[in-house]
Image 1 (cartoon, rainbow, N blue to C red):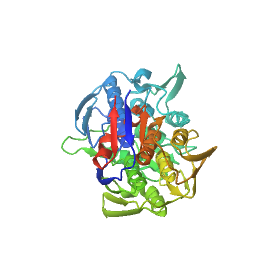
Image 2 (tube, rainbow, N blue to C red):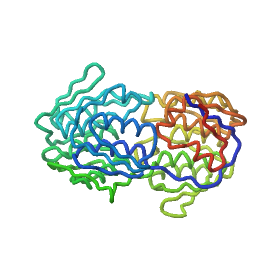
Image 3 (tube, rainbow, N blue to C red):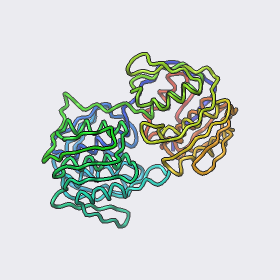
Image 4 (cartoon, helix red, strand yellow):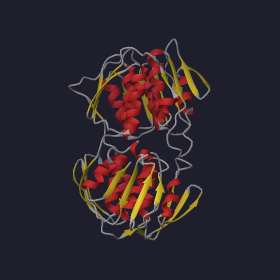
Amino acid sequence: MDKFVITGGNRLEGEIHTSGSKNSSLPALAAALLTDEPVTLTRVPKVRDIRTMERLLVDIGSELEVTGERVTVHTPVVVSPEAPYELVKTMRASSLVLGPLVARCGRARVSLPGGCGIGARPINLHLMALENLGAKINQEHGYIEAVAPDGLTGAEIHFDRITVTGTEDVLMAATLARGETVLNNAAREPEVTDLAAMLTRMGAKIEGAGTSTIRVQGVKKLHGIPEDDPHEIIPDRIEAGTFLIAAAITGGDVRVTGLNPEHVSALTDKMKQAGVTVDQPDATTLHVRGNGHLHAVDMTTEEYPGFATDLQAQYMALMTQADGIALIVETIFENRFMHAQELLRMGANIRLEGRQAIVAGRSRLQGAGVIASDLRASASLVLAALVAKGETVIDRVYHIDRGYEKIEMKLSHVGAKIQRVE
């Protein structure tokens, strides 16, 4: 099992390029199941979750051609409309194949998803919506089976709470349903907008993506996306945000390129309030300069366009180095402070009260042996280790490999002392 060994104290300087979005690539790969024609994507990151999804697609019957960041998926026939537990136990996004499989071949059997233990992410919102579209749902032995032998029929759907994967799953299913489907209280995340853009290129009729109401007029058939004009996945806003914080926490001077500044504006607004200089030299670059004098700034996670829950752990690491006390409130997941205990081992001053974390800053962090409990928690430990005195050893870094492409190489390139040890 791999570990990271990090020696803190180095100021980061240079340029880091942002990879394509993992959270956008996963639904895009699932959407390729909706057609029997080849679908080509580019800027697909090489991370563990993507490899798992690719293996799942092959198991279902897809033919894959992977060349660097370019992936072509061709599913002329769905051989097995099933996502087995053995394959998807480490990945939450397995439920994304549910909607496309039911829409295309009238049946799907999907294991309840695994992944990070950061709290309940109930799939019942997906299932209720698919039932509204006419699917019959049965759940037993850890599997969900959805059947719609006569196809799906459009309906008006209201999500009781905002769900990104639920919105994506039902959006894909609705493209092949008869008539109109209206999704109310839909997620507005950039990943949803990117998926809708891809589906539109495939012949879907979608209006309102990026707003809380999405309308879909079902079509009989979707077509592919050619190799000479692939769909380009949007930049990974969580990876970009992590690198922006890495620059700030080390008092560095770093240009993060290949991102969409609007997608990380909730973070950069907080960073500016904390005393970090953030400039935008061009449309896809942010230049961060930290002066070593951070001020504590409170933060509450919210659905997009609010502060992303996937950046909460990294922001907490930043606030351990700020003057004053910061209140961090987690509203999305009820168990997303597991990194706090590991930060305490490094000398942080954090008190947890339910879904609130009270961070007393300017802690003199020290290197220690710590364990990554989930994907984003592991990123926060890397950030803390960059400024800790001495050596930090982070175990179970397979979590970080699920969502970050060669993070140790990217950070080493700008001056971090970090190495992967088997």
